[in-house]
Length: 80
Image (cartoon, rainbow, N blue to C red; front, side, top):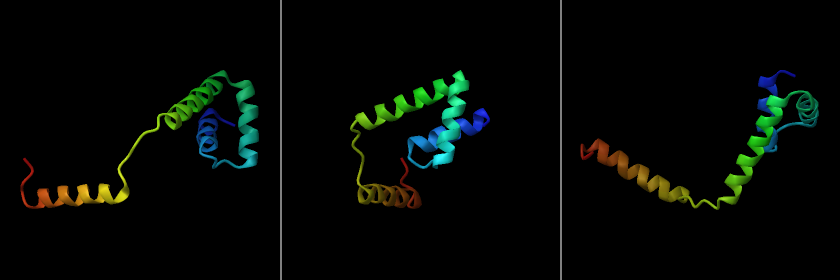
């Protein structure tokens, strides 16, 4: 497995999208490659940090309301 492939599989693994064979090949690659091992460690830490941040976002209908209002403002030339 090349490093580019390993980082891609690492990303897929973080989002539980990687298959069993890919995960096995990644583990073998990580045993041999310190650069990818570091990438995997940082990727895991980033995912954990984001999950623990408890970020509040707008509901989809609120986002749509703002988007529609902005589009109307631009369309009517009130973009000041």
